[in-house]
Image 1 (cartoon, rainbow, N blue to C red):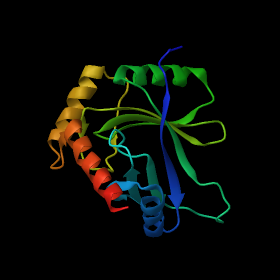
Image 2: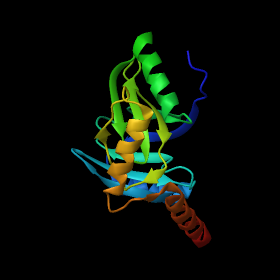
Image 3: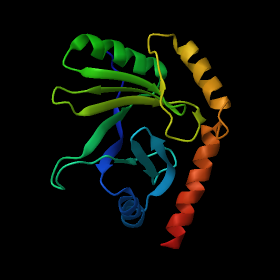
Image 4: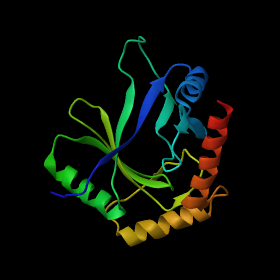
Length: 184
């Protein structure tokens, strides 16, 4: 078993009407929109109040059922390195109880998604040193070497017109957060 520390990072919430929800999180919690976009069948709004976090909340369309139904999209944990993510993948794959594994290269992060025994989605991820606009969800082979994954991701990011080093993106978001707080 790995001794790598997991730290809580962000939460995803399914919503029925995304615009009033995004406005609520901006006005009530002081979060700013860091990205927004579409995946097949889903619109996502990424929000943060911390420039170190691409998002602390992600709103996702697709909520069904009654407003009293549970709506948490995922529980997310950060690890420090890609190698730690790969170690968790190998360990969790062998332990049993987890299902529906999906490894994703987001460009700005490498992620392993899986389901717990009651089918709640769990995410373990680590940040990449680059930023590209989200959502981005390319397949990720965690069995490749960390060096191969980094090289493939760097190419993916450099080919994207929104590419910047993560420090540049964090500076931009820090300013956006400061500007939003100054208005309140």
